[in-house]
Image (cartoon, rainbow, N blue to C red; front, side, top):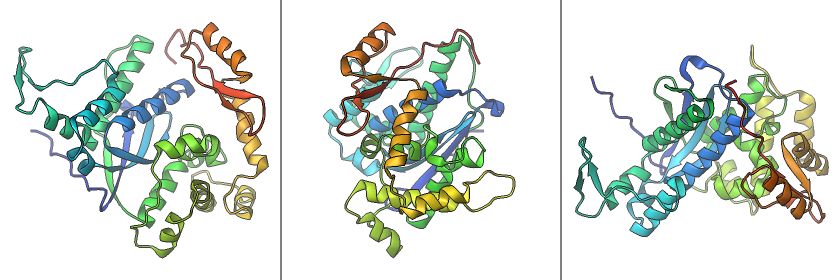
Length: 331
């Protein structure tokens, strides 16, 4: 019996919370896998017509809070559609211009495949499906394995705008705390809050704000009108810490000491926290030094040359992540 098609709500009405787990809840993702999955997520989000609000990649599952942009896909030009397609699959790749039959022949579309590409890149279901398939192909290739990596179909929950989206986002960013992996949510580098704390400018470019001027709650409407991304992030960070400070039976939480630290500055990162997140680069697989030094390290490790960023504002030191060589055997 065919599966019932999923129903999604448009961004005009709310968002979707996507959850997917590994087959048998197997713990397959270590730091290296989480990093690659995060990068894949951002790559696919740059091509598909979706807005990512929040995400968290755990050892055996992931959460994504997103809004669809189907209307934008329907009005996109063929050139824009092709640019987005190539962001996902490479600049030398081209989508099929018709329906590919089982025998390998093609039944061409009258418009050259434009509407087919609109439907593809404007679909949340296709976005999650192709993202997960790409994760599986990469993982299987790395560890010379075959077969499925994910369990049942991903779960999707409709989330209203305003308070519902805010609470859902906080729930996602608090996953590592509730699981007892970390005591502070922005210490976890494979979540949206962790990324926003470490690289606020890069995160602001690729993640959509949780707030919106069209929400019904006056308080969140005010937050949405804050002039800077840092003010919005500070408000949200304080909300997450206050939420994490609420005790849940059998779950980890944020210590009251950390909650007081964050609320004292209304969620803003002080110089101490800023230094802490910059200094974490030392233990998270990076090179620190001059741009020439960093480039030489990357060349020796035969990795892609990644432009370094300032280690601290106004300083002469730069930093970038240098990926470790792939492990010889599966974890």
